[in-house]
Amino acid sequence: MGKTGIKSGTNIGGRSIPGNRPMLLARWGRLGYGKLRRFVLVHFNRRYVQSQLLQRKGKCSQCGYCCRLIFPCTMLTRGGLCRVYSGRRWLVCKIFPIDDRDLDDVKSAGGRCEYYWD
Ligand code: SF4
Image (cartoon, rainbow, N blue to C red; front, side, top):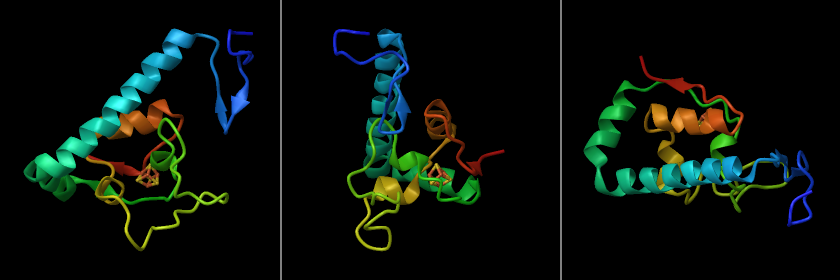
């Protein structure tokens, strides 16, 4: 049990907390960087984003992993559905994933995005 009183392997919000805290922090750091990176790309490098989207293959299986990177989005219902899917979703949500690094983020969270690039 760690200082937080959370036992290693405890499941919180559908996530297993690994015993190795530095690993957990490294993963959160990586996923946080991914969120920031996508935000910057979507708003400041539209040319790159457009070219990536044109080459992107596959389709969304609506698994919802991209809605739970680091923390579950506050717009998710208890059933895991997006409350604003057909309304005012963030641009980063609409266009996810931008490139392979985003697929790696989903993979590191235990999921598998159905989009891909050759
Ligand atoms: S991770 Fe990929 S397949 Fe899953 S909901 Fe997000 S975009 Fe769709």
